[in-house]
Length: 309
Image 1 (cartoon, rainbow, N blue to C red):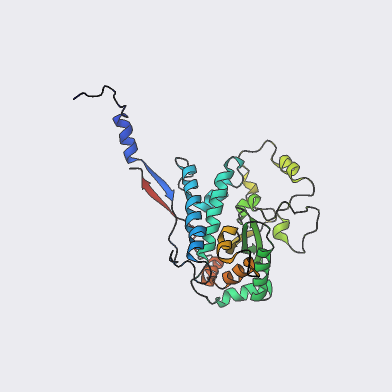
Image 2 (spheres, rainbow, N blue to C red):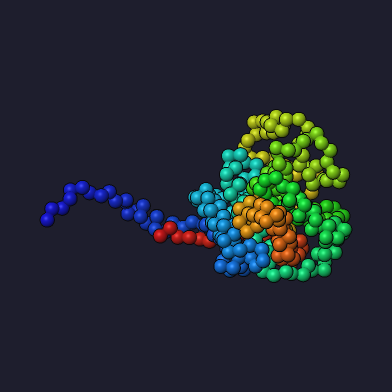
């Protein structure tokens, strides 16, 4: 029997030893309280749930794991990644993946399998801000129906001096983030329709604090950041005006979430409006109350140490 003369190169033993014991930290898709074969009862069917949660979240997290592997960001939570990359143009892709995954999980974590009762303290606080819970519902759903494009609509607690329980509704387009530390990537407008010269609604301090001056927004950004595309000074961490926002609830308005089950205009019914009505009936108000009180856990997606063996 002839032996082949071609020798297959083998890595040095030292390289093998390092590779065998190398470990990395990875984000993984957490298990929700919903069964995959049932979806979210009376809201999202199994196929819609599979696309909107399992497939979407898996894709975003796989992109993130590939991006941060071997970097100082490897052990950061998704929220930390959002805050650290929001003002780093070089890492716009990582921001988008992290913010999209975080927002999507925030949405699904705030759902319930059946209708829940709003805690009395939360109801009182919301009534002070909106006049009634019905008014809050209308503002959330009308804002969502008015979005011409994908994104999220949020209920946030605006922490003001002397008024710590003030709640507001705001929208973020695409992968925009509601967190103050990421305020330059909040993306509260459809930029194809925004008019910087138009007056804002009275008292809309949340949006006013982020709004650039009238004129060409590209020129404004170039002037503001000329020669400073490195690390942004800590003084710019929060939006002007000193308003801190705590997200407590959101609804996902990306089309892949709702079109499968609700359609666009199926049998004469507005699919988006129908989706929002069913979403309202599946809000987990206990989770919302925990977030509003600060008792909710700070990390919404976990990491695990994975061996490369």
